Structure formats: C-alpha cells, structure tokens
Length: 177
Image 1 (cartoon, rainbow, N blue to C red):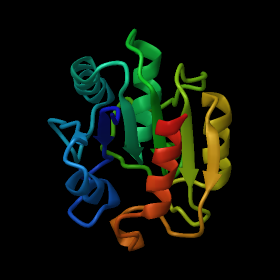
Image 2: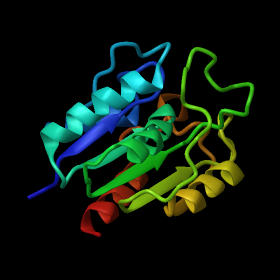
Image 3: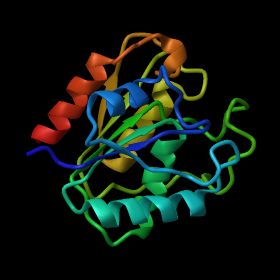
C-alpha cells in the first residue's frame, strides 16, 4: 500500500501543465494542500494548512514540494510535533535573490536545521530562483540527499517536463526508503 502523498505547490499553485498537477491527475490518491492565498503567501498561514493536512493523512505521509513549498516544509518541520515518512523538495528558491517573490511573507530566514525525516533536495543548474550552490547548502543543513538534474530552469511547467519521470523516480526511491 502506497503512503499518502501531499502536493505542496509554490506561488501560483502549479498550473495544469506543471508536473505536480500531472502527478496528481495520474495518481488520484495524491492530494494537494490548498492555501487561502497562492499569490501573496504568508508562511504562518501555509504552515497551518500543512499541519491540518498532515494530521489528516498521518505519519506515513510523503510531502512533494516545489519552490516556495520547500521553504514551507523547512519552517513547518521546526514547529510541528507530527511525524512524516519523508519529503521531496524541488527547486528551493533563495530569499536573497531579487527574483524571490516580493509578496511572500515570513519565509525568510530559512531554517538551517536537520529535518526529522528523510528528504531529497533537487536543483537545476539554471534555476533563476535558486542556484545549485544554494540548494546544496539547504540540503546540507536539512540533512537531505542532494540531486542536481540536467538544466531545466525552475523545474516547473515552463521547463516542458511533462510528467517528469526523473522526479517521479526520486519520489519512488524516497517511498521505498
């Protein structure tokens, strides 16, 4: 039996061509964590919604985060008492860059403590929102496995990845332990 999978999009809520949405369509058991505000996110509000979703899905939960969703996971992990099975953290944005969403509130500074669950950080060498060096530092601080994929921008719908099989294989490895 597959563990529950929660999808955590970043700003804008990952549109119809985003790999997160495609995974959700292809795997009806995957569930997106809904947020009140997708374009001007407030970290505390996003944490609250994630906490509710994890409480409903249980300790076998796997989180699949993209972009700002990665920073959400790091902040949530510092505050929660709940356990999960693991997290796939894709394209973490660097709050120190000019490209970081100006409307995002409370996501910086990014926690630099080990996550209490297995995790994989994935980065692309040409991501305009976060360099591989930044992602590597996050992975080291969070105790995560680091994977650098071939150049594909922000690893989003604009990257033209379709169902992003390489990412799904990373998720499978996380599930299998």
